[in-house]
Length: 213
Image (cartoon, rainbow, N blue to C red; front, side, top):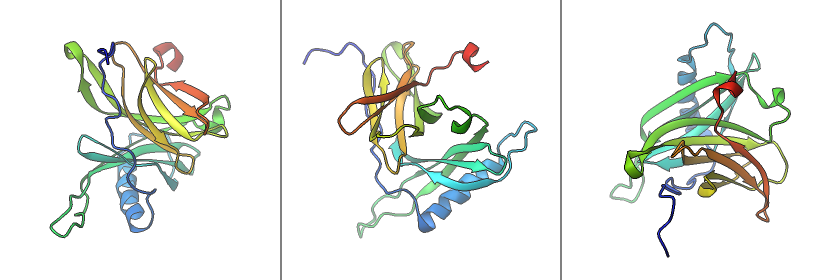
């Protein structure tokens, strides 16, 4: 094959390895996430208390596993964030050791799907690292998680300048991606696809200052 025009990391993260958290493992993640929520700077706003937590598919990159989480609050805001950890390694018996080195982060928003009926994808994102490309240019390795707000979605992909850089099959209408963003003036597009490979929706992570205002 000839050299590629755009040299950027693709499919750098492991695909999801486990089912959505439940039981004792979900309780462990819940404790870590709620602790992060207590550290959120509320800016004087009444965030309220977290309701039921929604877990998203796990993704592993650079030696750490990330489990994204969201939760609506009693004041109708949304808490969002993740718990990350170092997965256990197999011991002499072949059994995995316990996960360790837990790190969690959280924030909140009032921009919910109910308040934005034009949305087709409800997305959250968090930069978790950097990948250095040609000439020292850096890409922001970004954890993206979300839910489709339209029917029929089966797979979510991340595209950078038209090049697929990650994908995730939906699990209970939820997906997680880890992909390079903001590289060489290009920004990540998240797309939804149906079972026949037809594109259903596309959302860019790029929002300029005027749009934010």
